Image 1 (spheres, rainbow, N blue to C red):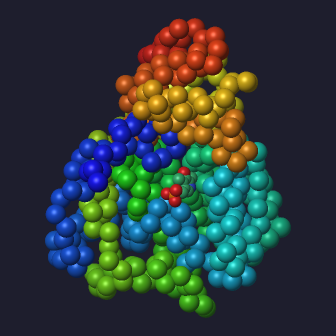
Image 2 (image 1 turned 180 degrees about the horizontal axis):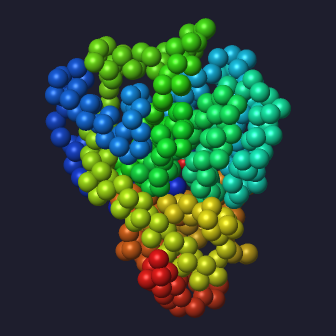
Image 3 (image 1 turned 180 degrees about the vertical axis):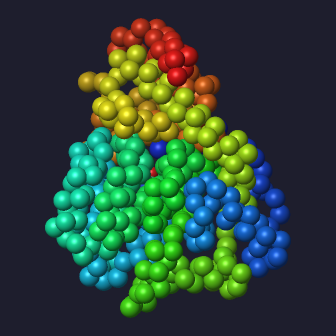
Length: 391
Ligand SMILES: *Cc1c(COP(=O)(O)O)cnc(C)c1O
């Protein structure tokens, strides 16, 4: 058998995005035992970096073994007990997943909906909470990767806390791409994943919980159903006690430390500004190619993930195959309501740069032409360039 040799790809879909070279190098450094003092030191540094990037002082800020969905499951399985009432906001695929996860924990789920491509309206959360004052928590997606919607959280946080509930946020695609402001906004618990804007392979789910959320867990009447995801046990390993729970995925923790270090070294504000600049430039370029963005309100668009509608009569799957075969370029397809109708284009972390914007626009322009669409040559790149100058 030959040695493993996967093709080189530019991953501009909804994740995984390309890992930073420094991260891949860190992953190939020698293993340590998971209770080695040198490794424990690396874990402490990783927790500090994670607090900085999450913008929080929360003591309980650590990485769960597993992908972003394990982070989702961690928060629900720990915070929810059977028959608890929870509100889940649904305006895309990941809101639906939250409903599924919460109901598997035995919660009675009340859904607040908004159309795909739009934000959840604070008034709708308020009205639903007034009707169900005993609700324990409200779950919401901060960056809906299935549509490209950026959800404002300030007003919803105030409403949730007026009703003495917890605010739980999915920050899988926002962490490291746009401000998360856990403490400033008052998000009680959040989870994320490594393969979106952190420029790390998939495999860890960073979570953070404030004292209110931790207290809810301490006051549980029933044992957490999942042994693997039981935060009180995991916390004993990540705390000074260093109690063995399960073997930490050593190389992934190296990767996390390195990916976070790169973000902190660049500076959070610079990282956010870079995503903003190139995301806006890409969006201007797509519109100049005659394409329609899924999120109509420009203020509610994510910069790290843009959903764009496939033109009438264009074969979406073939178009994507062409990009992969001819350019080694991966876009994401639409999910759920948008299946076959949209592309999802990511500019996440390490990938958020000008070279990728121009490359993607040029490749997409050619792909449109192969299926007979008329496109003004170079219009996308020209519009992206002028958007960049005006930002
Ligand atoms: C990717 C993603 C998830 C799921 O993460 P996995 O790493 O695929 O388990 C959850 N929520 C959002 C918003 C995501 O973008």
